[in-house]
Length: 496
Image 1 (tube, rainbow, N blue to C red):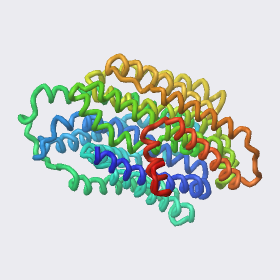
Image 2: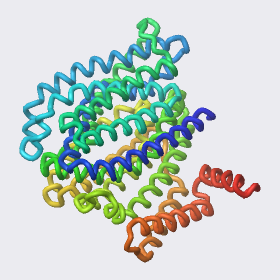
Image 3: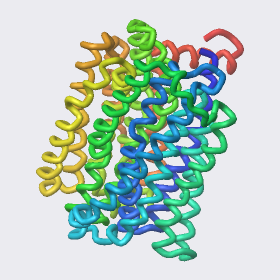
Image 4: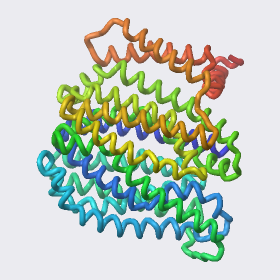
């Protein structure tokens, strides 16, 4: 477990640094230098590209983690790298052609309220290639138990270069074309970085001897990939449905407001990414051996600590939400997204807590069950967005996303419990939820200061102190208590 701890710590540090850069960029640079329409345009371009990139992978990123234990041999991994390079290449060709064929219906979807996106329709094509291979190369590095450098690339390198693009646009060095081109080029540079990094941590041999892989394994890889392609179709649409439908119904300006609120809410899930990336290979190994008990213990530990960290982050965001909109440039224009933050934040909290169950399903022989409800969830999402966006605007899109999320994870957990014999629920979770409610209640009765900076610092200090004290004395997490004792020992020089 030593490498898990080291890589998790490094990955968490990098993630936190990237989160600070991203938060400062989004809250104080993007809102100040870009109009809501520009924000909406760049976000829609990125999301459409990422949606097709997810399909173009042909399930490769999930296949890497699931099947790498079967291929790795220390001598070229039986041509595994060739497989993970060739499959996305075929996928990029297929889905780029599909993207071109779909130009007319996609144009019809956006033309009424978001016609500006149509002008950049073809610009999405290189983004599909960049984003597909970036994820595949990152996942291959993760499978080789390396997450810190890929995290540095995604969380810091991409954010810093994107910040540079925003500054160039905001200070009129480049125009709108330069803004869109720059955002796309950053993804390309990040992909190249990973392409040169991966050979340092794993085999990159392109030799492929099909005889070295048994026929049952080849059949399993093919069948798994086909199911993942179908699942990715539903998943890619579901993950971006709210933004795309806001763009279609309300226009790019409201999509920009939704984007800022959505970003604030997604801070909840940032700390969870490192531990998920590094524990996924452990789950794959456990399920390969049929060790359901080890998978269950891992699931419970991951779920508890994800809820702990994600819940604390969400709580700090929500008790300071009015201060946040008062502090950021043009905050009045974005305050309409307040309830978007709440409902998307709650959905992210559910996601980080129960999301590892999806990892267990995908690595078990029951992976195909996810297809039974993916498209149903997409259909529900489309219906609820169409009903709630006209009634409640961008808040309606957030409510629709939260409802879809709750239903999705309820069904997923039923499958995990029935087929993989795992459950995330522990008494620690009950104590956690009670602590969050107590801290929220304490915040409700705190007096308000006129200065948002002072009010934010004062509320954060009190909420953090009460949270840490309750978490420690109620012994919610062994890992947290151990960390606190270590810190106290270093400070006071004795056992806490």
